[in-house]
Structure formats: C-alpha cells, structure tokens
Image (cartoon, rainbow, N blue to C red; front, top):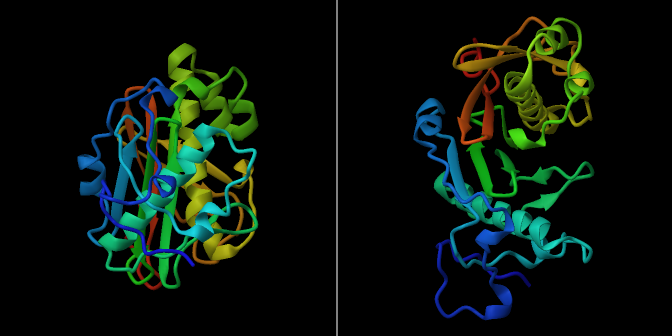
Length: 261
C-alpha cells in the first residue's frame, strides 16, 4: 500500500530507504530557473513547480510510481523521474487536487488524475511540472531543452518547407538556438495535445513560426478537431543560460482565448 506523500521539501524522521537525495554533481549545471515571468504569463489557475538538482531535498513517492522505474535505469534517469513526480504532486496540491500516483501510459506519457491536465519535463539539471483542472485548460505542454543537445543536421529531422529554409539560412549559435526552440515547441505541442487525441504524431505534423518574444505553432493537418491547420497556438519561450523552456496552455473547450495569437 502506498503512503500519502509528505508534501514538503524536507521530510523529518522518514525512513532513509524511502527518501531520495539529489546530488548536484549529476549535471554540473546548478543555476536555478527564475520562473517569475513564466508564471505571470500563465492563466491564473495553472500551477507551476520546478526544482534544480543542486538542492538537497527529501521526499517520498507512491509505491506505484516507484514500480514504474526500470532496474536498468541510470541514477540520472531515476533522479529525473522521481523529482519530476514530486514536482507534479506539488503542482496538484497547488490547484487543490489530492496528490495521487501519476502512472504511465502506452507512450510513456504521465497519466494525470481525472479532470486534470498537466505536463512534466526535465533537462538533466532541472525538472518542472504544471497542472490545471480541465475547466481551466484544455491541455498543457511544457518542455525544457539544453542548446548543447543540438547537433548539425538536427533541423533536417524536425523541420520542413519554409520552416527548414529559415533555419538553414542561419549559422553557428543562432541556428543551434533557433532549432532548439523549434524542437522544444513541437514537444510542447505534442504533450498538450496527445491526451486529447490519444494518438502519436511526429515533428512533421506541426510547424513553428518564431517571433521576438514567443513562438506560434500550427498543425499541418487535422489531428485535433478544435485546432484546424489555420488556428494558431501561442507558445511561450524563455531562455535560462543555455536552456530553453517552452510552454503551451490550450483553451478549455468552449473558450477560444488561451493559446491564441
């Protein structure tokens, strides 16, 4: 039987075998994410929780969540998974939802409680989770990507047509940054829409337009009946010392304002 998660950053007196301490040497990047601007841009009923791995915090997970971890998982992967679930539990608490095990679907997507939408992401140094009731958001996608993951030719695998042409005209760090943004934005689109439509779709299913302070996404075909190809999705974007965060909050059904250009 799982125990109710102690929703504090430090759990006094809990059995050491049930606690996980995060080691800052896992990543070498220990800066914190200042999410004040991100929070200000979100609808008021969307919660956002993040941690960086340089913080030593102790917490419990539900037994059902621990059972999702493979015995072959590396320490880094195990740390990201555990802290991501902890952040998700706290995000649930912030919206007034009793924390419960967040299990995994057939495409490794987190399964949120009934009536809740959410998203989890990590980049090896940070984890972040967001959640909202379905009455406040039709879907949420968040994604963290380090620009160091870029490799030459990545744009050819994630972009097409005018989108690819624009990236190919750039050079050096500008191309790496722009390509990383497009990659991350498409990940956020996938995370926000997959729970709605229940089917896989690839990078070629959406296109991204870069603006000065945000991104705009469009589907290339009709994957979601509420989001035809001509309906724009406003995607937030913020850089943190070599790491980009993108986020997409879809409008609740019947509301056309959130996520529109």
